[in-house]
Image (cartoon, rainbow, N blue to C red):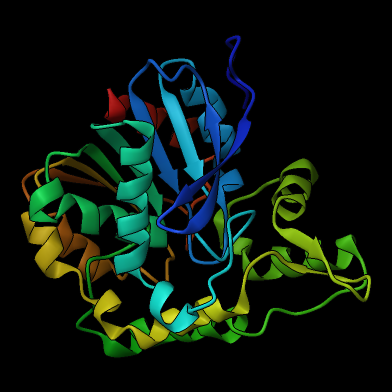
Length: 289
């Protein structure tokens, strides 16, 4: 699904933020209202190309690569830097650096957690007007086994990214571990793989992130965001994949009790919807107005 407009192509930028080089793609007119699209744990900002292309007709879109992913710098202190607190601080400093005061936020998985931390922090509660949380909860389920299964699945591939000889092999791997995203054709899978692979010195290809990002799981405070959640004053759209193993239904329903939150379930998808179909894009577009 492609949006029109004369500024529908991404522009790549690098900025030094708190001593780290952060890469992001920007779409649309910087004079228009800003939307930040923040990706999931092992992904990068190019995951939002389809959504950003469409929204850029009416908004200025920023799609950062979190440090340790994509084209952003890898940390020399991964135990300290790879955590939600630092990611949130970097996001705020990036916005300050760009002179952007008020934003709409679309966050998939980890990106949603970062958005929750910002919107739920006293000094920044007014920064995010609209908050889209794509398949991420504020904390644990009453069914601990369900939580553990989702986390175990993610840990199983994050800390030791596999090496492949060819692009096609890497694409097949992605089609296996990300089957619940809802990508539907070869073009989408080619783009998904192209923007998240790198060539090794030995000539093979692998996922494009620092394996040390798995050290985030040592930061157990990242698993409990309920205090931030209660403080959020933004309008909230909570998107849940029907078969998600990361956002349990009981957690989503508890979050949906918040007066400023509305929940939508995407049928037949898991963690996390790609936000690339006409229905999903229209859902977000209507919410952001």
